[in-house]
Image (cartoon, rainbow, N blue to C red; front, side, top):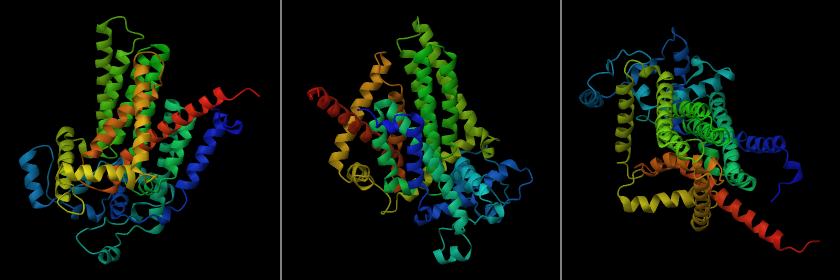
Length: 450
């Protein structure tokens, strides 16, 4: 099916997508319900200034958010060296709760947005304290000022608009422009996404760098398919590793993108064009894997001064703290999911019904399955050199490393379903778009000539 004449020019089409996304994502930011974690993300955006200014004066809350005695003993028993002193006074990039709980790139993004709006470290709130009441937190100034909160959320909205436009391009490249437009409707019209992709938290930053990683992955496959020049795919895979490092430095689960990059390197090596011998294929595959992993690791470390003294020990400590926190949080009956039976009862309902734009599990499962079948077929066709879009294997690989970990979490928290909802929307758009395109094609072929 042809696009309307007014939308056939790419610049006009992209302009319409940008205007539509901007109208929906930039409007009503102040009406989003406040999440107490936003207080933490905004407060810790001070790490941006700390990373740039050698004379940075740390705010008072840094020395009042040390690890509990029990957690200190636990860390010392597991990681006896490499964490530095665990007792206050501690410097800005020392080992304490806020340097362990999240890496800093999402905080940097929030800081860039607030600084553009004129907010400095002096304007920041202290982090929300969960062990005291809301009224006490308000009295302590832990609620960000309205303008500060707006600026941080607006930054996340801009990143989410960019993510939506990249996903529009990838879905369109994989399954056609109709599928791309259906995806935009699902992405821009989703109440769930309009909340979680505009809050001043780490998820919008994680999704943005994930989308950039997918874009560079597609360019790696595309340049190989067109030129068989081995340098260009390695260049784009290195950039994919760079984006994976930034995604992981936004939230730790973003590091899984490096695995997708490694798989894409092997897919290039298995492609029928360009390699004369098996030895050449293996050499390229291992070189691509090394490039992706090194670019990811170096980027992840470079943007986080906390890791500099001992990257391995301190990265391990960050993962250990998150696992410990999730284990403790899952004990709450309102949050935790215990046992396979409970997980099978909750997770499909959340993804296919509660948080989907169309609250019909049957329709979403059917269209998503059609979209998945098409995506797998298109990816296979690309791999064997018989057509298919390079966007298809990229969407599949990144979906696997992003969605599957989200499904294994022990916590039934709404924001943990972000990647499943985004990629389900892509599959639904592909399934519906391809089905409608085929129906229109059949209708036109059967219609008598006028």
